[in-house]
Amino acid sequence: MATSGPLTTTRIIAQRLSEAGCRHAFGIPGGEVLSMMQALDEAGVAFYLCKHENAGGFMAEGTHHATGAPGVLLATIGPGLANGVNSVVNALQDQVPLIVLTGCVGEAEAQTYTHQVFDQNALMRPITKASFTIADGAADVVIDKAVAIAMAAPQGPVHIDIPVHLADQPHPEPRRARVPVEAPMAPAPGPMLDRAREMLARSERPIVIAGVGAVAQGAGPVLQALCERFGAPLLATYKAKGLVSEDHELTLGGHGLSPKSDKIVLPLLEQADCVILAGYDPIEMRTGWRDPWDPATAIEVTHLPNRHGMHGAAMSFVGDVRAGLETLIDGLEPSASPWPDRAPAQVRAALQSAFQGPNTWGPHQAFAAARRSSPRDTVVTADSGAHRILLSQMWPCFGARGMLQSSALCTMGVALPLAMGHKLAAPERPVLAVMGDAGLEMIMGELSTLRDWRMPLAVMVMVDRSLALIELKQRATGRANLGVDFDKTDFAAVADAMGGVGVDIASAAQLEDELPKAYARETFTLLACQIDRKAYDGAF
Image 1 (tube, rainbow, N blue to C red):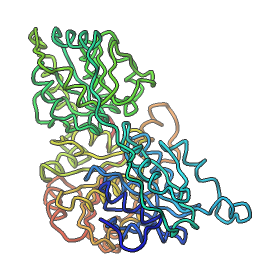
Image 2: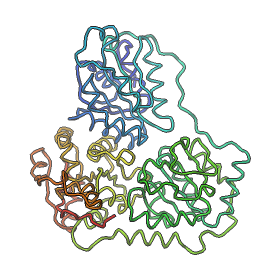
Image 3: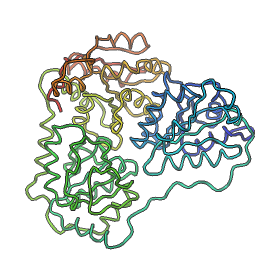
Image 4: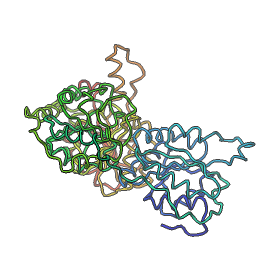
């Protein structure tokens, strides 16, 4: 969408973001970003006021998962940017393209004016892929670089500081040359590719592990083709759940943080004679996933070089995951019958049974009831905590990006803003935010943002008055209960006071009755599931 009026620094930035597919920006305005906010609005990138910049960053991430375009966070000078740091670090570790726009004073003014001023680029360089300051007449080049860098593998955040004195400055006609986004690259022909294809063709016990890189590069269809052709079961990280629908007989669900699931699936990896790593980044995994297979059996098709040391691979192809997998299997047929002992089917059955849980009311019953009463295409978001691990094991996803969470940084307070951003960008999809009571209390002010946006959203909070995951770790290490328990909040009353509908939930039947109503309402619904302390004991 072209902007009206003379070209200025901020209008150039806004126009290029609009051309990149951005339609939403989030934040809290300050005097230093008023020009940028207005320019975004004129370019068709609507600005949405939130209550905290950290939540705004996660809302921006939610829009990316719905649209594929970079998220946009707009923060004012000083405390505005500082508030958003957590969401920026999350975008770096979880590989989310995020454009962070901030205001700043010019270099000359900063020599004598210090109010709210600090070196914002120094703060952002370690936690972004790049941090720029706009120079006079170069806004077009900087924003093109920012979008290209943010979208290139691995995707991530890019920061742009906009000096106040340049914001409304006339800008020359943009250059015709654009900074290109990198084209997909497949492995080059050669001896290493030949060896990889031969290993896969001869394999009797192949297995595939998909991660965040396979999600970002749309590798779901080729993953399914690979698994079906070679009879290879598919393990996914939490971020990669649903790349191949989890009702497919070859899918073994998502893994990474559950010791219970590790005991079931890790022996399968030890038996494998060919491990295909498809965009797999072990940043999502717990320490038990160090060296889980013989490196001599592993073929890595990855979007970023292996510098982490968590696992080895005999062959590593760095490039586009989808194109790499297509090249690997092109014209290739298996020369052996896969898994003659049917071990993957046994593992699938064991996983389904391991997380059924008790027949009494608690988190197992709540999550099973929520899945039964939610449409197949529901997007569920999970906060960090005990509930997330169990939900990630129990909730089947039938398409990519069906479950959103912070799986690398594992920060709290993400479920609600992720859900809000996604619902805003894709209002036709049902969305359910699931969180613990501590996580909701951390960002409770955003319930009033829901009211202001008049957003129909289902929110499910597990009320156990405890930091349950940390309390479990305290007991497991013989430590005293300290700093993990708190009093009960009447969340239903809070929701009512914030302009939504609040309901206390005490049974699976009640939840199955109330959740469809929540999806159908024109305002948000908060379902407060009352569960016992220590309800997660032995759950995952």
